[in-house]
Length: 393
Ligand code: NAD
Image (cartoon, rainbow, N blue to C red):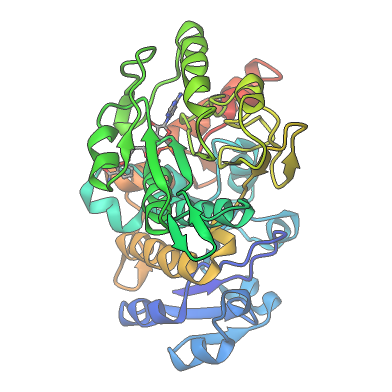
């Protein structure tokens, strides 16, 4: 079976789905690895490293013409879609809950689609395949660095002959995988860090990193299914925003990471809360998206300075800006999933397996993943299902 690694074409995307170090794991399982010319260049993996690891390097046309399985980080664009053939399998972060129509198009072409972002994450045997976690970890790390760079003062307490600098007060809203890494990184930079989340289980995790946990009286618990948060009611949301605003006003830096699967990112920092911050404060909104983010006034991919001097950074695709580390982790995730689905050197899809039932989106010309099929069905029957209802991981 030929497994091909394509060069990512999305603007700013510097990751590669498979790194040279992982190639021998696939060849040892009887797979042949083909890598598109220059696929790893932007993540500092030259073609020569893939060749040395036992892969073949080929131009794009040869790759699509001969591959059985295509490995990608993000979802295929129009030109990749045009090249994919019936009988081929594509594995990557295909965001089928955000773009279910892509799943339909892949099914119509007879392409088998496997999406890492629908992996059942609570199964311990799936942890090595959890690309959402590995990439969120990279993103949380980079968010703290982006905040530190935009902040006009020091993060740590510094006592020098030229004076004493007090440490930055930094609050992380949303303490999942990304939030915890942002907390750890900001602590290592010397900031005075606190964290907040609606899942009570996160309190111990925040405190274990040496940060303070911010407890609000307005929302006691909003733990949902599968370790995720549930969406707040309107009343809870209003109370949370009002109570948070008082804490936000005392912070120098805020990093927001809050997400609820399948929903628009919750608004945690209102316009009034931003207006209450001192000039020179920085907010990094990791929830920033076209559907709106965690922070009023933030825009995806943009840095905005408010009238009162608060820098709002709409951080998108932070993992692509730490491309080597992100690709290393992604490569381990995608190869673990591929090997899980492979026997005797060939793909053996078995959707009675809980992992595969989650990640296999299309098969034999049909959209088979229930959550994706349901979204497409809704689209057919309720024209104009809002993007908000489709937003998700
Ligand atoms: P996520 O990206 O869905 O959300 C980020 C954080 O935002 C979550 O912690 C969530 O509770 C929080 N949040 C949502 N709404 C909020 C609100 N209104 N106010 C404040 N915070 C809000 O989450 P994630 O990082 O993917 O992980 C979610 C949970 O799943 C974590 O507990 C994580 O440890 C767990 N998890 C478990 C496994 C496993 O068991 N193997 C793997 C991955 C993640």
